[in-house]
Image (cartoon, rainbow, N blue to C red; front, side, top):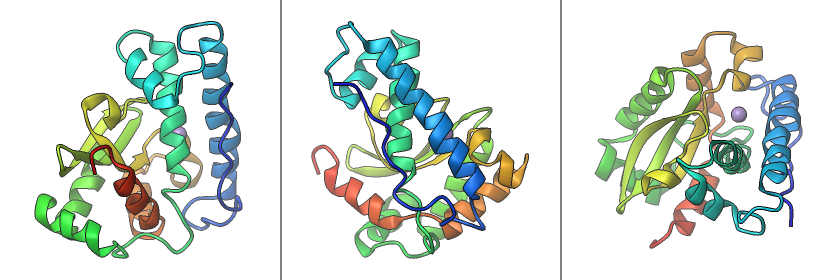
Length: 201
Ligand code: MN3
């Protein structure tokens, strides 16, 4: 069965003023849709057809760039929408996650600084991540559509730092976008859900 575009879990204007309706209309309806459509076209009639998204991502990494890029970006965006919520962000971290941040990342403030730095220093398009790997949290960054799944990790939180995610609202000011995103939009409930789903958790 072909992959379908995951619906945006809120109204287009619900993340304003931190992310505009125009950004979400383009980002979800054009960019995410294109990844899904391209993925379906590329896997039709191949061994990938019928496999689940994570399997396709892992099997195509380093082998089939077109399939990989579109499959990974579909996965990343399926989570990017619920990683954001109106009135989110800031220090509303659930206790269980905060305890891990304290244990592995030197506390909330250092985690925030490291996450923002990862996003700001990713050269060109990519993602900043809070990743669970070998039972420990890490802050990482990846280029293009790459994600922690292909590096033995499990993504708990990711911020899209492709220009299509911020250029309409912030122009070239990626660090401003990252700060606004982190402090006002993060949906920690989805981070907690992913933590509960982590392989081996
Ligand atoms: Mn994107």
